[in-house]
Structure formats: C-alpha cells, structure tokens
Image (cartoon, rainbow, N blue to C red; front, side):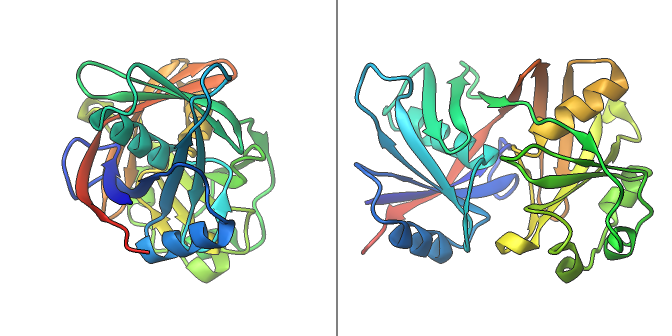
Length: 269
C-alpha cells in the first residue's frame, strides 16, 4: 500500500508539520495501526478509508502518535485532504467521521485547504504547581481546553519568551491530559501573524509538535477575544515553523493552510 509523508501548514518542503498518510480499504486492527505510526515516528500518522455513499461522512479518519491514538489532529487531517485531492480520490469538500465528530475540509483553487473543526471551550484555571519552573518562564494566565484536546493553554509575556523556551519536558508531561500550548501576542503584526505559539506533548511521545492544527481551535477563540477580530493568523514552531490562518465562526473554527508531499513509497507488510 502507498504511504506518504506530507508537510502541512506550509507551502514548501522541509518546513511546517510532517504527517504520515495511508489510504486504506478498511481499518486493520488497532495494534497494526499503532505499529505503523511508531515506524513512521512522526507526531501523527493519519489512516483513512472511504465510507458508503449517502452517509454523513465520506471517509473515516483516525490519527496515531508513535505511542497513542488521539481524538483530534489538524495537520494530519490537512495532509490527508492534500493526498485525496492530489491523487484524484476526492474533489470539493470532504467530510470525515472521527473520534471528535464530523469534520470537513475544502480545497481552494490556489491549493490551500480549509478545515472546519469544533471550537474549543476555554476555562480559566490556576497554574499547576511547578508549571513556570518547568517552562522556564513566568506565566501570565492558564486556560484548560475542551475534552477532545485536553491541553493547557498557557499565556506568556511576549513573543521572545515563547520563542526562547527550553522546557523541562519530563515535568511538563505531568501537567495536563495531552500537552502544553505556550502562546503570546506577536511583537509586530506587520510581519504577517497576530500571535505565536509552541506546543509540547511529551506524554504522547512528542517533545514538540511544530504546527498543531487542533491547538488553534483553542488559540483562535483566545486571541479573537483579546483582539476583537474573528480572523487571525498564528505562527507556530521552534526548529520547524508554519502559519495557520484562523477564522472563528461560533462553535466552529476554520483553519487554513497549505501542504506539500515530500515522500511517497510502498509500505511492505
């Protein structure tokens, strides 16, 4: 079967967030899916198979890190849509049945893809003991995110602080159900983005995820409330970076980005 590595939320190879993508006829057993994801060893590998016509979704979609299945993943969904469109397996809007509900994605003529995801609820919470020490930075505010995400959104003082983080990953692994989203307002929005973020998921075998679509379902309402604007652009990453355009639509958040296939081959198993 064909396996592809796609860089998501970027328009050039070797940047953005890489994801594995496999299009199947049906899902094999979970053990096999997890083994493949561990072999690919990227933050996420997406597995999808077509569903019968006439239902509420066109494809079933699942995502696995090297060590666990997750409820929601933005960059691997974008990568999957890119593969479906570039291989002629789908056109127009594609609907997915996933653990977090029905998701949809639409490709534009310029090759960009817009994901329609549920907006995350945000609940202010006290900073866990040791969070500032684990991050190596003073914390401005902390918000818990919705169940399908399970991250702590941590506001820091400024862009420079976010970019210079070198956290204690073992300590961060104990702080939330999934991971930590560190964020701050952009120092200079004239550079083309409104806020910055970095995401750490050591509990899922991912020290740092370069460009996390699902995190932007929480970042979008957080920064839209601060700015009074429904449409923003986020810049995420440390060593690898990418841009996510967000549009808040009440209970739904639209995430737009591009993708590039960098590797394609046969999975021999």
